[in-house]
Length: 168
Ligand code: ADP
Image 1: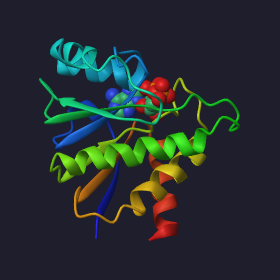
Image 2: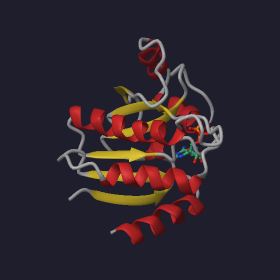
Image 3: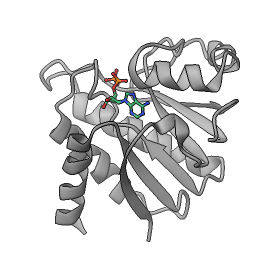
Image 4: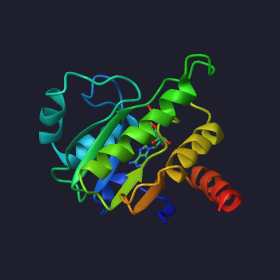
């Protein structure tokens, strides 16, 4: 059974095998958690990301973590919220699933997610958390053994905690 943890904190500080970056399609850095991850990892991360020539929404790419405590960064561009009519739920779920797949392929025992798309991209927080949790709870493979939802506010963490209490 996979272990799920909800914490409130800075994802760049986590000592896990892989952290997920809520990237944009250029993979060349941005604001929010993306900017924080690039700052903490150092300039080698940008160089590694350049080689991908971007990434489509819902897909994921993996790089080393460079100066981060995490061994890997999994970069996934979440959907921009347009009211829910542009396949946003399906694309957000794909972000979680494709990240889990890359973590598994790289033998990661622990993986941490930020609240993808819920910052500048405007995805409603409750709906996004439901998708995140459903994707992780449906993952039946052995790895990763532990998933951390790394929220950046207590309010976000509360959403995940109450959903988890309902589902488990
Ligand atoms: P998006 O463009 O996918 O909406 P943002 O970075 O704007 O991405 O926001 C995604 C989530 O990441 C938001 O909930 C934001 O509060 C959170 N966040 C910002 N910085 C950090 C950080 N250092 N660690 C964890 N989460 C963070």
